[in-house]
Length: 337
Image 1: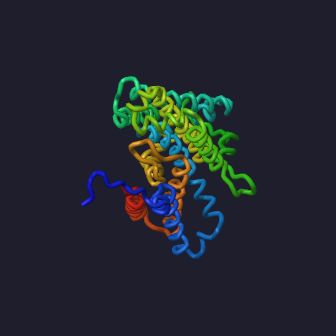
Image 2 (image 1 turned 90 degrees about the vertical axis):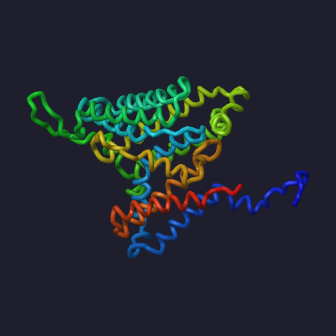
Image 3 (image 1 turned 120 degrees about the vertical axis):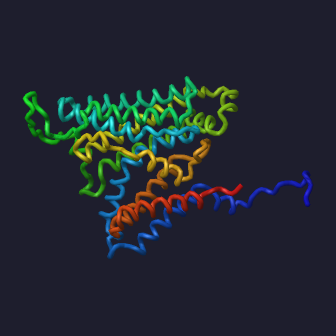
């Protein structure tokens, strides 16, 4: 038996590399893609439109995952992103379709409202020291009720109710058509480009700005960060405020794609966003991870859903398989101590 003076040998560089979150996340993605190559639905997996539609499908979830990554890196969690998406979708549809606001003004108002909602959650957590799970759970319920209240419990569509109770149908706003359209000869969806822009913004925050280092410091050890002079409360406010902002962006995209504001939109989306972040390799207890890993997690779940869809797998089976594969991927990515 070695005594306490026995030096601890560092892991071999190759072993450390194989155990890195990036390699594990990439391995999970390649495994799912390999399943697509095998179960290709008579060649459907090899056609570009399958991949294009997958990128379009995961865009809204990916945008939510961007904000969730920032929060989880700080050691927090946000269960309200799905409800915030619903409020944003309803509000944007009301402003543009029913009230006739200019699209740019409606976008600014919705993004500001989303940011304020996130700041409210950050204030409860940073100022009043409420547990993130409890604070955002309460906000999730509150915002879902708000979405149903401002919409009257109905979907906000192009059927505009008049004072006499009759309905008048209006055209779909040009802003909705643009956001839901495809560019470059119908090869790339606009929502996909919006998602990629959100990825770049998060990468700049986490990898290039001082506040990004603060995020990791707070998530790694909050007390040590506080003693080192990191403004812990401000970091939490900023993280949750940005999460609310990205939730509002996702809500605008959701409304445009559905061409209506549904108060039930975003139901359980927060679970998918968390799964994407964790599958990518960002630790739930904070202090490690990154937006590049989240992108791999988004693609992993996106391809998994698409492969099951093109093979006509029933919804019940798809949900069970998705859950099992998520558990397997997370277990596979666990770093050995």
